Length: 569
Image 1 (cartoon, rainbow, N blue to C red):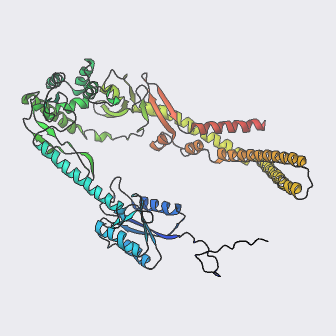
Image 2 (tube, rainbow, N blue to C red; image 1 turned 180 degrees about the vertical axis):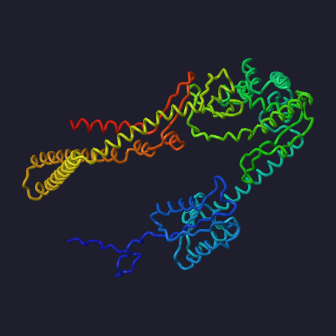
Image 3 (spheres, helix red, strand yellow; image 1 turned 180 degrees about the horizontal axis):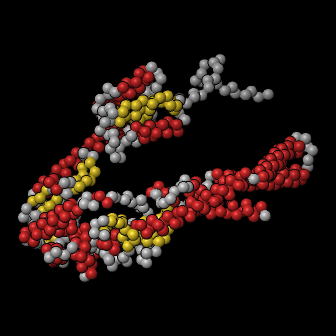
């Protein structure tokens, strides 16, 4: 008999038991959440809840971590580490309760980058603590570490500081150009163009400068903004945005069909650039300060006088400004004049639309009967801006509310009638018998499924162990009981679906719930309108098209009740 070679583990002394493979380490994770006073309440800023949700979801998804605590510092600066929540976290780290720290990003852990680096490079490695910053995609367990420490997070910090520094310097350079009267925009104001030999200077555009002069002339004669816009559209003169699109300066297709409207005319008539003054800095944004674009007050604009050729003289410009001031004063004087008549809130906000152009119609008010009655009506804003673009529409609010109430009252009344039918079905002997029959059918199908499954499971031992079945008998019977199981499953599923559908229609129908909440109302309310109405469209002939919510649910309920009536006949 040949001898077999005895296998020896040269890494383990003879006689020692074989060692089991090392189990993967499970980290005791602590989530750290911080929000400073400066960040609190800012639009788009982090919240304690969003940070906690992000950290919680991450730890919960990891097989090598278990959550052992959440540590919070609300209203605490990240410049230093004297924070109650952080100190509590470090106490648990020193006590051995926490050996993994998870944060949303490095800035939540700390903004003092020297101290942050000290924790990452020295303290946490010494204490065998894993550190994870989710948004920075940084994990000390997997991060590359050079001889002088972790490079990636510090590079991110340096890049952020560098980017903000560049933003600050670029912003400063542009401000200097603006104060020198140099043009720094993409497009010159309508009526001007960039000089061919110096893009930071502007000169009159031979095509559009006459249009600007005509706008000022018409206004100085007393022509309204709306009529000026209408006149320009009637002449086929491209509006500023469309002009730039046609010239190829702007490539966005939404500018292709823009027309003149009164706001554009008003902006041109108030722009000092047409006096020969460079006006810039109306809007401001700053990356390094974290400020999004916003409109500046006029006193903060950068205005440099006499930088280019004017298109209108000062007398005409000032005449136009005086007209605007008088118009504004007259408007201010009318405010509150008819407050004694009371104000009716608009309850159809974002529900009424023009059937032709699809835009939301605007609610206006009017005082009639020599100042004794205040009425409201809806008009299409597109027609107001450009009468040729959309047919006129004028719908008195009182008339519209009557039409809508007739429709909604019918829905509410119909819902009450259907609720009565459902109660009748629910309390009838027929319903009790039907429920009992469905339960018996479900029980029978479940028993049949169980019986078929039991026989099916016993076939193989009978064939392979007991030899009680031939291969042909085993194959045939296995197919037979498989078919029985499938039929029983389908039957049981069908019965359960019937039970669920009855429950949905009789107890959980959304249309019925929505309408039933307004039983007893004598008129349309804001809550009712926004609960039951989806969209209202006003046509040219004052036609009103009403789209209602929950109509699929209504049809299902109507079909269910009809089927119940048919079953009872």
